Image (tube, rainbow, N blue to C red; front, side):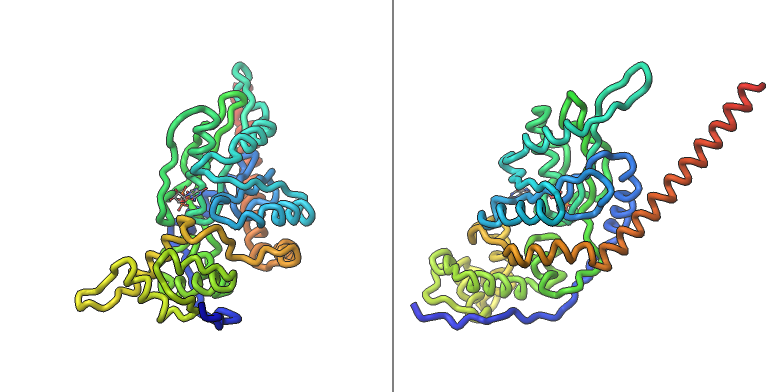
Length: 337
Ligand SMILES: Nc1nc2c(ncn2[C@@H]2O[C@H](COP(=O)(O)OP(=O)(O)OP(=O)(O)O)[C@@H](O)[C@H]2O)c(=O)[nH]1
């Protein structure tokens, strides 16, 4: 095998903006409903004021070494527990149910009081929110699918009603549509997000995503693609790589030319299914995680979003107070009549 002259860095400068109407609506509904829940299961930070449980789902696809580093960093810099799950295999689901049960509070009418936890599940499209809810339901109440799932982002379109995942105490979950920040400022992050399936593939060029995948594989000196697709020599050139993959899968256009888009789509799908092995796209070193977790507090986008969410929450509380006052005034009048 010839030594590979791999690229030192991946160069890409396209900014991807994807914030369809249903996401804007979803974000609004999530913020509005936040008052009604005790716990938020998050796939990324959104609700600083609530009890939060951060879930790293699809842990079966990530590099196994990353779990310990992430757990330690979240504990150290955020005092926050994280859970690693595989929602398709019900891995680590029992622990989540136990945690949610500990958060139950007394609710209901005076005659029928009960212990309840209401939980909102939030995160980017395609991270497995609905799959996690179904898994919690399978384990908690031994019941089948309640939330629709699928490999295309945007399956869940609205903030649905509650789904029971435990009987005693009662634990209810609220599924939400996948939401993203409207603007991903860094083009490489946008490719990573696209690779995870959080944005529609056609928005970012599939061949660029496949090129990034090749770059990552070569950086990790993971040449499993040679055996997988019957390729003789490692390459870091997507123009050399894609035709060989197209040949392997028999993707040809009408004139007999290799269909490179089909080859790129195939590779992306293989990555998402874990066929290219378990690896993590982000740099999960203790130092870079420390930088990320401390920067998050300073991130102007997060702060702006938080400020906006706080404002909405304050407005809702004010409105609630006004309504209560109006109700009290009305009942005073009625009692005098
Ligand atoms: N390998 C693996 N795949 C998973 C896991 N959880 C979910 N998936 C798959 O990921 C895809 C998306 O899952 P969903 O549960 O629909 O994701 P979602 O976050 O609800 O998606 P939106 O409705 O778009 O927000 C499906 O094809 C699932 O089978 C997991 O833990 N491991």
